[in-house]
Amino acid sequence: MTAPDSPKPRFSRVMLKISGEALMGDTTYGLHPPTVERIAREVKIVHDLGVEICMVIGGGNIFRGLQGSAQGMERTTADYMGMLATVMNALAMQSALEKLGVYCRVISAIRMDEVAEPYIRRRAVRHLEKKRVCIFAAGTGNPYFTTDTAATLRANEMACEAILKGTKVDGVYDKDPIKHADAKRFEQVTYDEVLAQHLGVMDASAIALARDNNLPIIVFSLDEPGGFKGILAGEGIYTTVHG
Image 1 (tube, one colour):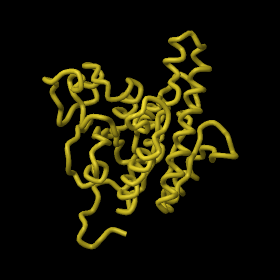
Image 2: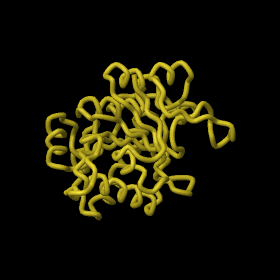
Image 3: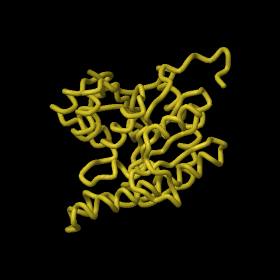
């Protein structure tokens, strides 16, 4: 329950999109359990405010379809392998959230009934209404689509009010701020500017889908403690992508 003196969160239902690499911590491959637990605590803080939370987690910390394809693997097979990697990450996050007492469901676009629920939109909406965190795994269930597109698709289907993309940096820059000290951060940027300037917020399909449905994307640093909660309060440093 939200404390009486706490400000009302600016969104009541959101999609949190994070990359698989965000779960690696300082390692170079796979999962770093303390990092997974830290992110789960951030999610719990926002969940405790009464916000309904959807999540999509990439699989790049385990396997990325495009990289497999670039190394000679057949693209469709590589993409399906990448989808399976997202399921592994989703299960890890589910475990971390449930340890904190947060009820959670992993919902897979590829049927694997022993470990995850199949995606049924009305059932997923009901989970959210019951204040369960829904982690959507296996992308869209189709090759050639990224988890960015999957997050935008599910956010629209679930009637989320915004996509919150947690990254290593605190917003959208005109160039990589890690490599360029003079990189400029945008406070706000339009969907069309993201596409025209190749700003790399999400892939073009995801941006176009968000634009067509007027779904704002908020890019913030997942490494900043309290960053997720801060966004819900309109605080902190971030970039808003909108129409």
